[in-house]
Amino acid sequence: MAQREDGKETRIRLLNAACEVFAKKGFRDAKVADICQQAGANVASVNYYFGDKASLYTEAWRHSFNEIGELPLTASAGRAPEDELRDYVYALMQNFTEQNALGRFSRLYMMELVNPTGLIQETWREMIEPRRRKLLEIIQKIIGEKTDYEGVLFCEMSIVNQCRALLTIGRSDLEYLLGQPISPELIRRLTDHIARFSLAGIKATGGGRDDRNR
Image 1 (cartoon, one colour):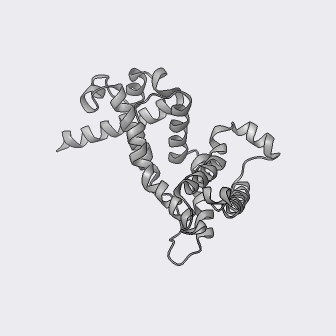
Image 2 (cartoon, one colour):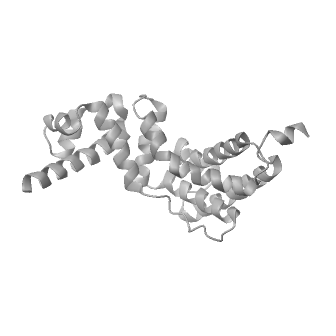
Image 3 (spheres, helix red, strand yellow):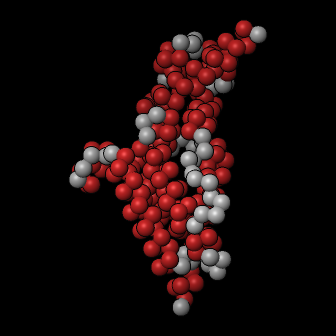
């Protein structure tokens, strides 16, 4: 029993170390030896628990994603979809600016964007789809049922990419553009702006092709 518990702990240490090293260096520049040294494990343990570096990378992604849990959204029963949208935007903004588990996953994601490996595409889609459906449902409720689904997808892309600026623009550059340091209060004000901007855009376009043919 003790050996089994020790093995579980070793596996978790390897995953935590892998998340840190991959988030800092990316898949190609990360070395298994560095991960094992940080985890306090021998190199053979990676082969034993994961098979190879590529499998460790995939599992590190899953581990990091599971650490952040569900987006901290307010229960939606009886709430206006406009309020649900603001909650979703705020959750994304927190995700992209936190330095703890949320921030670690964001850094992993950014490394994959910069240097794509092709290793986590299916895993990523599997993990993100439940969260994505929440946003699509919110947008659909705001637009109504009389739009084509392409319009809903376009609105989703617009909203997510506004929030993603916090991840893709360097912190110092972002503070320069905004003229002030990043703070929780600034994130809340920026959340309100993105939510209002997105709502106006959704309502102005109707969310789909139908408006272009009027």
